Length: 137
Image 1: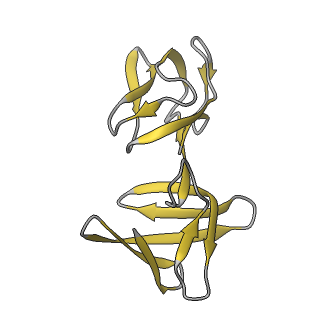
Image 2 (image 1 turned 90 degrees about the vertical axis):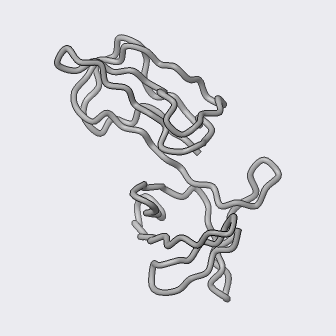
């Protein structure tokens, strides 16, 4: 994978014969945020070289940049089931938490293939909107 800066906060990511545009914003309190294909990621460690190429901290013997993806509650709800544990591998679309709100079940799904970094909720817990339930990387 090659990442090249093409403008202020705009990067071209070339991988698997594809080229995608990623937008990056910097927040002095929370680090860098990347926006790609309708998804939002928060970086845990990314360095930019003088040439504008981004390199990430090595993770599990690879050199891909590592991103942090929090999954949050969309509305006030009760946690019915937590279906993953820290360290679990998840595939795009896998249900990681099942919530109940207004007598409806609300599955929270993984937006991409990832590893569960942390589980911040437990079954029976009442959660508020924007509460981080699961952290993926």
